Amino acid sequence: MMLSSSRLLLRSTVRQVRCARFLSSLEEPRESMPFDVLIVGGGPAGLAAAIRLKQLCVKQDKDLSVCLIDKGSEIGAHVLSGNVMDPRAMNELFPDMAEGEWTKTFAEEQGSHATPVNDDEFLILSEKSSYGIPNFLLPPQLHNHGNYILSLSQLCRWLGNKAEDMGVEIYPGFAASEVIYDDNGSVKGIATRDVGVGKDGEPKGTFERGMELHARQTLFAEGARGSCSEAVMEKFDLREGKQPQTYGLGIKEVWEVPEEKAQPGLVQHTLGWPLQMGINDKVFGGSFLYHQEPNLVLVGMVVGLDYANPYLNPYQEFQQWKTHPAISKHLEGGTCISYGARVLNEGGYHAIPKLTFSGGALVGCGAGFLNAVKIKGSHTALKSGMLAAEAAFDALQEGDAVAETGELSGNQLELTSYEDAIDKSWIKEELYQVRNCHEAFSRWGVGGGTIYTGVAAHVTKGREPWTLSHGGLDSEKTQPKKYFEPISYPSPDGVVTFDLLTNLQRAGTYHAEDQPSHLRIKGELADVPVSLSMQTYGAPETRFCPAGVYEYVEEDGNPKLVINAQNCIHCKCCSIKMTQEYIDWTVPEGGGGPQYQVM
Image 1 (cartoon, helix red, strand yellow):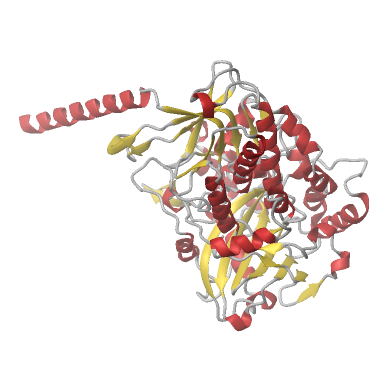
Image 2 (cartoon, rainbow, N blue to C red):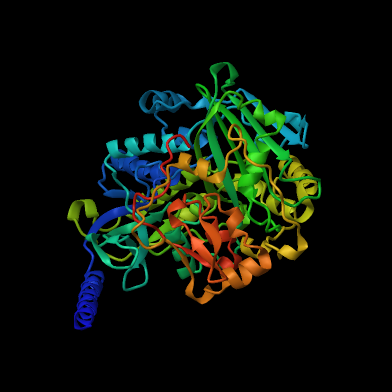
């Protein structure tokens, strides 16, 4: 008995000492590094900003230190897009290259093709048949000739190499977990996540305190629903007077098909089955199918997260869509080699927040520049990064450059000229023309929305004397389960359709299991999962998550939510569609998450 008590006392003492050491470690000041410009996120917007800054440095013989960090294990690891790219911004980013020459250099240096579009189709699907819409009836923004089919993750790797060659310091595998503010409340930079913390919250032998990265200007280029971007939007009330952002969930597979089945340059989009079963159906979304050189087929579906039916399962809708005769014929004899998902902003022009604040700015999809009618956002992301870089370069002419002094000095500035530049650019022109279209689908269904979009794109071009306001968050659009019947989806055949966990392996997602979960239930909403989400809404999180992260199990006769955070592919859907947004999406240790190669 004495021995047992002594052991308990020893264990308790050791635990207290460990906790004290850990708390002491957490309270230690972080080491810091200063830069002229810090860019958070290695997607197209962040990389374009980095490249443009260095181009301006060369042109005007000025040295600015530029640092870019990304939470993925390498640049491009967390980048996913359709992707048919409008080359306008790429041509502007590399003006010294002949138009389109970047595609040849990209293929030679990256071994990935930017395939010119040579065939453009738009189909309306019923359950067994399809009907083509003539291109002259489609909105001009849906015409794809002159665009390129490519892998955005591969393009970002190529851009990352270009940026490094120009002197940008790039650090993948560093997750920005916290925004740092100076004594005046201006953004001073970010802090990276502590590493080596166990699931029990105690330090492991590998514990390292995060770093603080300080900058005269911090550009947040995290993509849709970035955690630091959301934090600065809340702190500076950047959404005041703006419509709520609404999102879509994009799910994608990449297939290798026999060469005789390949049709390089084919672009096909569809509306209808299975997402919309009639002209009054209000589920916003559609599908894409692209043939990329040499023999890749990129297939995917985007589902607007403002849907009402809690039984709708976006992943299963996508799998069912692939069985349609107009789709499955493209996959015959092929092999699925990659899978992934990511949310995208669909609110458009009226949902763009104020873009600047003292010490930094929002760029790319984190700000919401995606054109949902055009089904493209990479070109606007690139352009916004370039415009932010130009504004930052001009503003930083005053004061001492960190590249020269090695330290920060002076007060933080706000890049007001960046917002003005966006307002005068083709980004605004493009988004303004279709500013009411998404809401038209939400109000009048796929039939009314399609008609409205056609009129807006061909005739009014955004000049309607009204604004169709989007009210409420996507999480608030889910209706109680009592109004719907459960949806029965076909079982996967393992050839064209797959169960979720099998497909998840193709995302290559990985998180060290011995770390605190990065998906956390907000303390004040601890009762929401079981008492409200499950009871009233039928546990929609078990269906809308494209990685099988959330499940309910029975424990002592009572339901309990289990969060399988190791499955997470960083799509951010749960932070948007959860009942009352009960999940706080924080970053895991840097390098965790999906390992996309050809997305």
